[in-house]
Length: 232
Image (tube, rainbow, N blue to C red):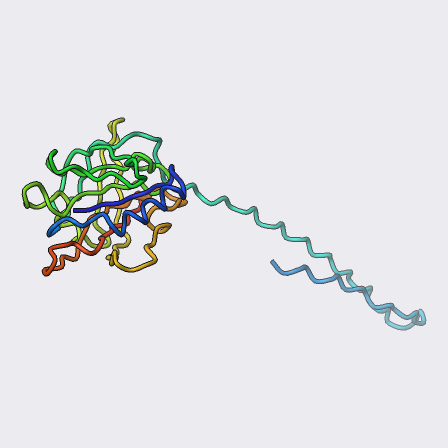
């Protein structure tokens, strides 16, 4: 099975741990222009009294300076106050389940949901709560206990535009829209740690599971990641 994670709260130290986990975790089976200058009137010559007098030139007015526009402030991105998540739902694939909490193991790697509890999805407690600014991280297995399907067995089928809903302890529901999905070969170097776990300017979510079954070895060799942004 698999999963890995690291988050905004824990900083780069945990990100490094997550990168290591990314390469090892899913080894389970099957798994305006300036105003113009004013013009000066031309000088008028004196003329004899019997001549038709020359009209006095009309002085030009000095154009007024346009006021500079007042800069508009950028609106704050949508966000919610901290509140731990309790249930995650992905309607497009028929998923809804209670969340458990996941921390770090003694070796610095992220915990993964245990099989003996039915392989529930888990929220990484060192990442922001869903709806807070930053990437909230939830992981789940592709495979369940005794070889059955895990909670995120169909996660690789989600598409950009699909929703992720997270119910929180305060009774609110944080709704995210998936804007990107990524399949990452765990055997490659350069896991996009910062893209997955690094700080963000908006409230986002990451759902992570394993993918890419090697039929010869029975090992799931890839990580599938769904990126979502909080609806405004």
